[in-house]
Image 1 (cartoon, rainbow, N blue to C red):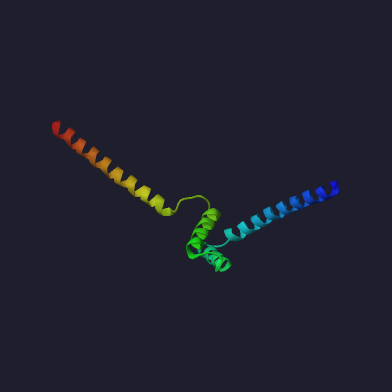
Image 2 (cartoon, rainbow, N blue to C red):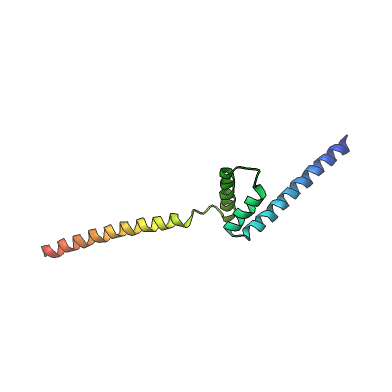
Length: 105
């Protein structure tokens, strides 16, 4: 009985190791693909197994997972535009104050 349990334990350890290696190899493969290639690859693999909405959410999750947790570039563009607007307001306020100071002298 002990040898059977050892065999089962070893089998589980080998299976977990194989799963880890397969996961690493799969991620490396996906990292070398563009976002569109990843979406196409997943569409081919999952067509008929999941619905269109679920496929889209899986594709988004995989692309995000492969590329990292960075927000899209649009997010940064919006922040920069907001900062520029704030800066314009500050510059206008400073210019108005400078004109008032110059007028009082």
